[in-house]
Image (cartoon, rainbow, N blue to C red; front, side, top):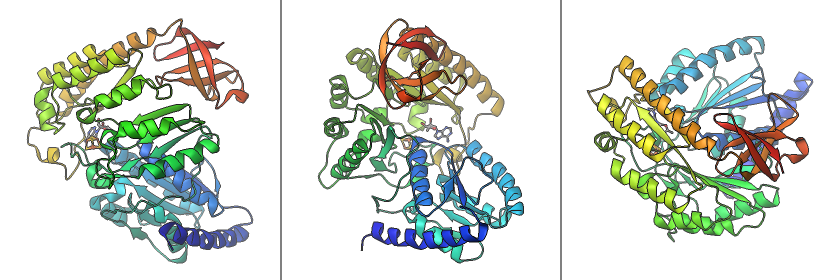
Length: 464
Ligand code: 5AD
Ligand code: SF4
């Protein structure tokens, strides 16, 4: 029996337990899955929802449910603090509903200090597991219901990639697909390599199979997910490049749009740029984290490129694919960063004309090399630098956005507008949002939209 078959056995077992509990309750058991963090976590949460529904839970938005699971992130400390804060609220729900189960999983749980704290101060939590054994969720559920007290199962690492378990997609028409797990880069500020483990690529045949079945199920847009997709396939038995994988994915009928996340600048090949340039399906969007524009800080960060190399790369991409939108991540306040270093970053922002940039204040992560550096920057200085950078980022993003005004471009309709139900919300190939008149029959369709008016970071348009 392979691991997936074993887990299907546990799904059957869990189903019996849940239906017994539902009988006692006199109605179906409810569950709520909350996701913190990145696209990888969002995809993992779809796997959690898939299992929970398969064993008989009704999924709801409200955290006052019979089972709540937090899929946590630990990339910055504020995500951790939010989890602790919200656990207090869950405890209140649990006092009123003693049968309630509280589960925690994801990156934060891979940190021993977190587990210690939860054991000590949050004894009402029922189940804790990490990033490497999420495929055992059904088994862990059975274990939780069959035992008393807190069940903890954290693995340090794994080489297992378990496929073909149930998944509940958030959107019927678009989906993320993991193409690799983990990261080998060890940027000095980043905790990801410690909590997600070493880089492991999935076999291309398995990825293609999964995408084909998604296409057959009505998915038109896919996002290939990995911490560093540009190094995809290098360690496979039969090595293959990311660009080569993209070419294969393009052949799949029914898939209209292909996105991917995230690219490390040091590994972005000319081959990839050419494949993107010649593709009808690969979206006009590249997320290319800069982190810092100062060569000195980049070196300390272990990013393995210089300011000049990054600028040359961005320029080449804009030259080859003029309609591409480039977005980025930037950290302010890395140890030793001076005002002059921040000016270097601002210089890059101005030169690259980012279409959007996610700016973060440096957060000290225990166990990373940067956490042990002595020249930590004080909070006030970080805030001042951050605000200065943010203003520039917003200016360039606004300028970039305006450029599309008057064009007609394809948009994939994602949902009814949150504030006005006579409008739908669509996404352009370059990842910008446009709102226009339309109804729910358009959801999941790709339609041409005239971009009438730029509202800063989004458009108002008219379907053509
Ligand atoms: N502090 C602040 N931001 C961080 N990131 C990763 N680690 C840290 C940290 N310790 C940011 C990086 C990365 C994004 C996902 O999160 O910019 O690209
Ligand atoms: Fe973290 Fe760097 Fe890996 Fe991205 S590439 S996950 S920033 S270590």
